[in-house]
Image (cartoon, rainbow, N blue to C red; front, top):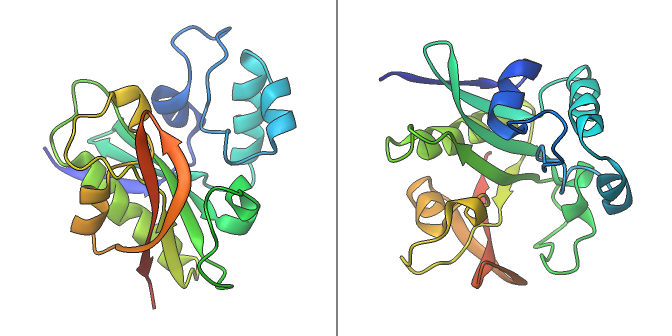
Length: 189
């Protein structure tokens, strides 16, 4: 298997990773941290996919991992200032650098355990670096090696970010699925 990570620009490929199995279902579409909470709560069913399609008209929303032409993984990455992390009270700002945020990693069932999440993290680093980000932050679970439900592992795991050269930059007051989230950072200069 040869994994290639590319900017997420093709709607159908993004939909394959973060869209619903049934079009009328209301699922995250990885919008929860990208748009204001009120709008996120108002968008229902197919409106969410339509909103993502409009966002893609302005450029990539992150990166996708491909096995050949099949999309098998997703990572949401954007300037922190363009996300709700810009004003999140549970996840602190370490400094005033215009950092980027990596907040969601998803690998399709049947493709897990093959290093795709590691490729996605490196792809997100390259994506942010190419766009001038001085550093990339992530907010993974500090699970201490304990198994995490796949549904709630979307922010990634501390060990995966450590393996990618990220360092612990701050504790947070955010907890997800019983595990604390920490702020990790990788300088891109």
